[in-house]
Length: 460
Image 1 (cartoon, rainbow, N blue to C red):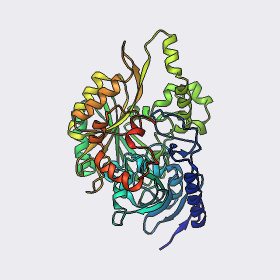
Image 2 (cartoon, helix red, strand yellow):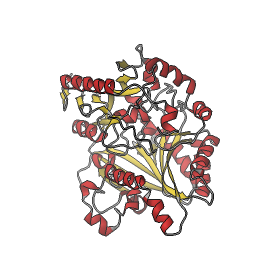
Image 3 (cartoon, helix red, strand yellow):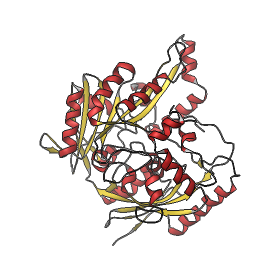
Image 4 (cartoon, rainbow, N blue to C red):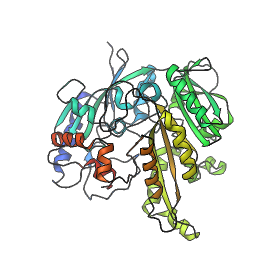
């Protein structure tokens, strides 16, 4: 068995964990506990604590990659950008690589993540073999499916740091090729698109060709696309969407395409899907002047966070004599058989397009109680990220509340990385509140960490 040592030694990792624990002990009892990190991929506002965050500065690397067993030991705050950079030279990647470079492995496991491999590999936490967690007691425990902390292993996904923070994870990897060839298949009818998704999820084949990656975009009721990716070795030229070209526009313009595996994994990051357009980064002149190294999601996020801090969008709207706007930034999982119905409702009630579509099925039969997707059930993640005008007399949350109601009506689930408006009873019914309370009592008996409802809905 060959182990490839990478950026952190066991000794330096141990020291980093000790610093983390020391910073945890230094936070006064009763004060909120948060990570001290420079980037985030959350979109819910929160109050400032005035307290220093947890020191995670030494927990950002890959400990080792084992090509023989196709596994990696990774620090909890390692970004997927750094993780892929360590595994790809060995012809390996994580089983699911979320779309944005600065998403961390610990964040994707505790807060969920998804991508075009999810129709066959499920969600990132399903490829975790074991993890070390700093719990609310200040202790580090190792959780795996078969040990004394199996309850924490199963309950960690969708806990968002309220049961503890991952310091180390051992994950599975899968082999890839040098390139990914793409087919952009257009559908003029949403029912036909969903039927195609069902067929591909069942057979992993479309029109005689294997499908290794599957996602899509809905531009309108009469124009949607599935993008079918196939791992391949390719010697010729490949497309580059880190320059003047914009990836999501190519979906409408090309039937076939080819990208390096690296560029395919980060195809959405360069323009934050399509959201960079709101910052002018897709305008030909501005794009030429905007340095390529700064065309990436974490840069856009910082710009938007600054604008939100000063409520710039609504200040401009009011100056123009227009209504204030409500942010509608959500990802929801809809059962495949109800997806066309949900999309038609969305088109009729929410003036946002395009919309991202990402099919998924849990990889195995294990239940993950805090985000209770059904094993064996096919879902489509529907992602939409924009804002809509607030109606006269509105509270500024009507559209988000209506979406929550419609997601429930079609038996779907809603991710918690953005704003939520459920009552406590509604929240507990959807996210296994009774089970969560038992985990909270065992791993954070003194309530040092925030409660999940307080973090996700009350925005503390």
